[in-house]
Image (cartoon, rainbow, N blue to C red; front, side):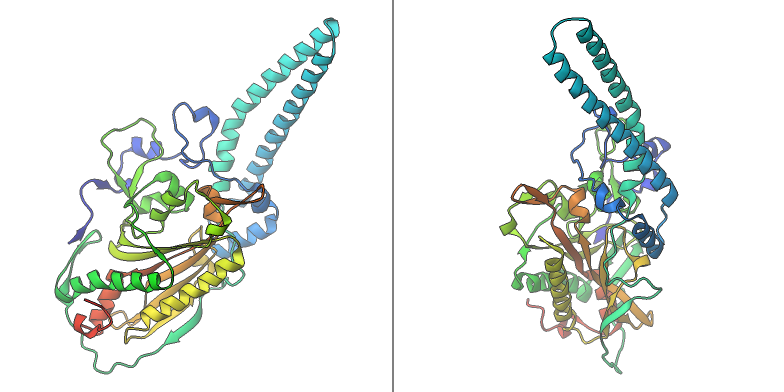
Length: 427
């Protein structure tokens, strides 16, 4: 039986107090909150590349149909930058005054310089205090909400691009085992007989395929903190919130249930991880569960790869697609691979390809898997890095859900496929 327990709560059902506690960012915490909040992570804020070409950013937002107030972003950026430049000027003047005082003997001029230095110190203190609100409004409220840059291959029109399609004619289709999956609501279902066997062995077969291709088998935690949910630009309201026994007032970094078969579950391992360049590329695969609010929870297989540069990441992206073809080519069903248009991408995704299998019940193709290219967007936000000489760099990441078992099992049963028909599953 698969169901979410009573220990989880939907954030939309929380009290007003809880909503207020989760309003601020857990990923970016300003200095004035340091006494109340612990900052487990300091993201790399790449203002230079993100805001260097504002017209390109505008095009990105338009192609994604992304709800972000562009004019407010620019205004907040200009205000934030002016404050930072003013702080830098004051710091420079303080250093200059300190050097002058050190060179002079006691006298009226020295006293005058000390008074000016004290005034500069007070000005800097007041500027920092007033700058916290400006930094919070810009960085947490605007900058961290900017989506990833689009890859050049991502379509910007209405529909996606079909990369591959296999058509299988099945004239003898007879749906079987509809009662093998008993659904109660979006959080709970019960599988028996063939469906239960498929749920057990399909993820094993999928994970073994990736292991044979050089992936390291991982066992990930089912839980993740809000800071990583924000880092991946996932909506915290789409993930179960755990009721913790010890409630801390105004706590931002809450605990969520996502499942060990989700992309989020890899991030705790990668956060603040500094690796040798020779350790890259990383190839990891994790079977486990996925829990997301308003989605049927499922057994799943999630992959995660990390490379030094973009071209190598795209090569692995293409290799992953070929592995998907090998796995889904084992089933006598029509399926296709579709490059997703920009307006359907998640904010962290630069490019994504979906695996869609034909459903006789829906009379349409249904998504059962995907693979996404994230560039260095997430690695900068979680401080996952490597060094070349004295230069800090951030790996490019590719991650995908190779199998959402419940979606595939339902379609297999619609096609009349029984467990005994899947001879490639090793018992």
